[in-house]
Length: 169
Image 1 (tube, one colour):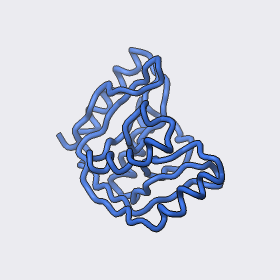
Image 2 (image 1 turned 135 degrees about the horizontal axis):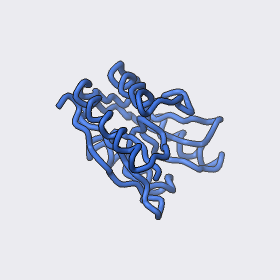
Image 3 (image 1 turned 90 degrees about the horizontal axis):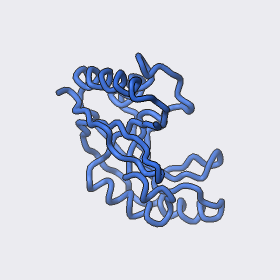
Image 4 (image 1 turned 45 degrees about the vertical axis):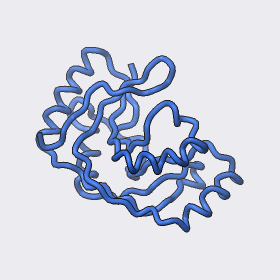
């Protein structure tokens, strides 16, 4: 089964992201707005039991994460994804690194650029049309996130929570 690990921001930030995702993100109906901590990975029932035990231990050690959104940005020209840029705080970087250690040992596919995706799979013209006005908007937002989530993918491609881990609990 396919699993992933994410942070879900507050409803306020999810509503802002979804106001764009509805129109510009084909994954809108598959998963709520999120910040990916660990890209999708395959695991058996036995393996996921070990992952859950490790994540429970990690969550006790780590403190809540300050989340600071600063602006709208893009991964272009590599790919036409538009996102809400998140400051890479020390707490966020440590949490991300822990998601690739122990039983989750591995190397991330990409450099960690914390973000909340609001648009993807856009044509070059559409990307330019959407990003231009967004760059002029104030995206400033701050909050503290006190939990992360282990998700699994259903047969229809949507994602659902397997377990939630409270930071510092």
